Amino acid sequence: MPERDADIVIIGSGAGGGAVASVLAPLVARGLRIVVLEWGAKLREEEYTGREVEMASRLYFDSGGTFTKDRSLTLAYGRAYGGSTVVYTGTSLTVPEQVIGRWAVPGLGFADVHARSLKYAAENNVHLLPEEDINDNNRLFLAGCRALGYHVEQFPLNLKGCRGSSLCNLGCPNRAKQGSHRVQLPRAEAAGVEVVTNCRVRRIGERLCEAVVANPGYGEPSAWEPGEYRVRAKVIVVCAGGAVNSPALLLRSGFGDRLPVLGRYLSLHPALILVGEHEQPISNFNGHPKSYYCDEFWERERFLLETCFYFPFVTAKNLIGFGAEHSELMRAFPRLQMILVLALDPALPDNRVRLDRSGEPVVDYTLTPQVLDSLHASMVASAKVFFAAGARRVHAPAGSRFFIDAADADRVAELIPRENVKPGKISITSAHLMGGCRMGRDATDSVTDSWGRVHGVPWLFVADSSLFPQCSEVNPYLTVMALADRVAEGITTRIGELLA
Image: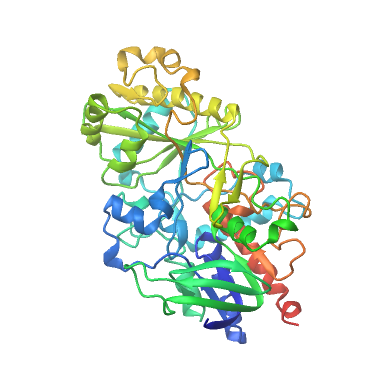
């Protein structure tokens, strides 16, 4: 089996891995070799085709449809050079102070996380879209929320030269989205960091990674030939594979025996995609898909409303039922207004990443009654927003009938009964995967300390959304980068000690 040596090995190249690689890159000039091992491919520019099924298969695990163990929820998370930053919409919120307070991690303060978040907001060109660039779907959401007196904010977005393709979730074809694949990774490579794509790490031993390089048939060739490798990390290993793959890798590598919390306390922001049909066409196929969010119900009923746009396949699978009514609504696709709902779920020890018999990750997650209450309330609130924005009818997954007409707008609470909100009966999804290697005090309550150092393993760090002790309660992108920045700073300040 071929062997490769490096001083620092970073596993994963998303928001966390990209930030760590960028911050540690100056160490290359001091003679250290840094290697990033990324499971996914680096697509050529012409391969960002915008074709829904093709892009989903190339940029997501399981084409964006990984099931939880009981098949009540699907998970969408990226697998590519740049990780999920390639396929998310660019929403760049800083985590609220009360969230960091609820996390209660010794040594982790809001001011520090906030300052680091702002650093990456500046690096990745985060800003508000000008009003003239906001499309109909977003204007309708704003108008509907304001008519109801709901509080609405505009999303800051990490864009440069956006041409309004609306293809954010399928990989921007215009190089506009400033994810790790456009900013942190190229900067790290320019400083001498090596990024090896199409490389899956199967296990970690004592500073030793077992990896497999394969050719998926698309994207740029990997820096290494296909085959199995032993990669020796002389100093440090940083796991940045995300909230499913980092816990799974550590479990597969035998760390569960010394870390009883490993894989536990997963939170997901369970989500619904809701639609309302208007009389007139809506400019959803152009313009940025996500410009506004409503946090009116954040503290009280524990959900957020956001604008969104999804393509026909994803939209169709999120509608309930089959046959004539389903077909009728899909034929109205150019007239559909869309809202994404995020439920703010608790972090529970039994919501976790496990391994199946072959060592592959299985997500064991239960939708609690409180989360189902939030999803129910969010459907009612979304229906009201649709009708306040002028929709002629609305499809709610838990509705007592397929369509709710505008004439019944004042009866939406009655026509969307709570008893219809059942796991497996409505299409629930998640793209915000958090926890599994949570930060905390010691090995009895967590996997790492506040600097991402794995308890009892001085050479092993974690730097991704699996660090979150609870859900972020907002879109997590900047928070992931801020925590990864702390991890990288901690490594830099201790590098002399670690090299000794």
